[in-house]
Length: 165
Image (cartoon, rainbow, N blue to C red):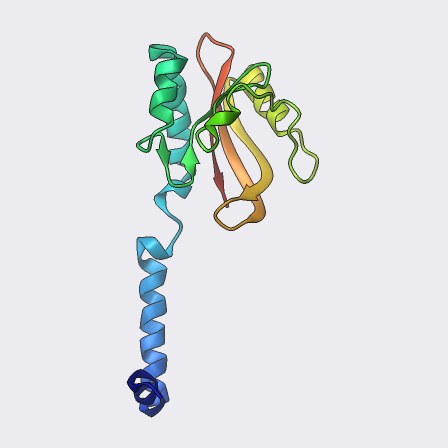
């Protein structure tokens, strides 16, 4: 039996409970123990708005170079995706090889036309939120996802950023 196990077995149960409770409380309030700041809807919205403005100002190619590297537009589970009005990926950081692929017919597990919904919001309102369910690569489970959509001013392009919850 290891020294740790012997010490643990001899430790009074109340002390073990107290240490466990303190550990749980620290984990609950520490940033690593909570949802990261990337899960903030206002931050997601701000990134999408700024991404659309960057495309409008510098062009898609220059913006794509920024979106594809870690930084303010790509951090942990957040990244900017760009599609055109035909539903073709123009920027997709998790899988750059997919750029040029049509995703117009992509549906969520419930059969919802995700890309068509994104394009509809962009065309009709210029910006807004789209909700659907999608595979979260961090948990490997289908989870609700909310995506902020922004039409690039003066172009038939849409920049969007989503978050799982």
